[in-house]
Image (cartoon, rainbow, N blue to C red; front, side):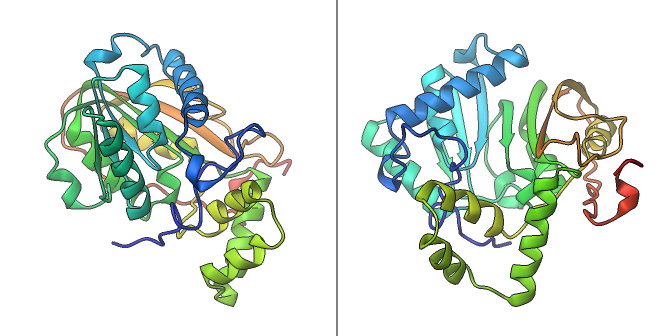
Length: 285
């Protein structure tokens, strides 16, 4: 299964993250200031779920650009396993690992949804999926594969795009226009490159250039994980018992689950909700 290789090539996947202090050039997106900014946010995330203890005994799975992996190493994790479908991100991180002789970070150019990931002989305490599952064709397959690697009482951090957010509705409509007009990535990139600052260009390509950008309801993810023996230990900006709302739903939400018992993971498809179905929204909307 192949994906559009925008990350690491057209997009650095960090445009909205970094502040004005960063010059935002491809050559400095792994520098100390950038990694420190990631460390600050990740430390806050770990404190929220009461997991900022004994990091030197914990193994973590990181999916994405690789900057999180460098932050996890600085924070003191025992082993960091980095996985990404982008050969560009994989090669960038591989060079940094080699140059700086980082022995506790292992990087793999793999797709979590495929069986090749299952061949990795790893055991993890935490899976950190920040901004990942809404870009996947089959996120439930990825969660099943991760489940096989996750220790009992291990945690899965899931950050996802939510149905209801007005900005997500606009993004979905823009992506629909691009698909209907069959606008190629290089044309899209070159057009916006002339009109936007590099930082803003990164945000646009990140959202419009990816193959998939699915909008989920938190309760659907919750039900899948509960069915498979997981309990919810933390949530942010997710209202499990409420309908989606243009006025109150944030662009993204966070759900963190703990694995309670060993059982065969049933990868029931997570429903991708229609952003134009009025029945999916609260009555006021």
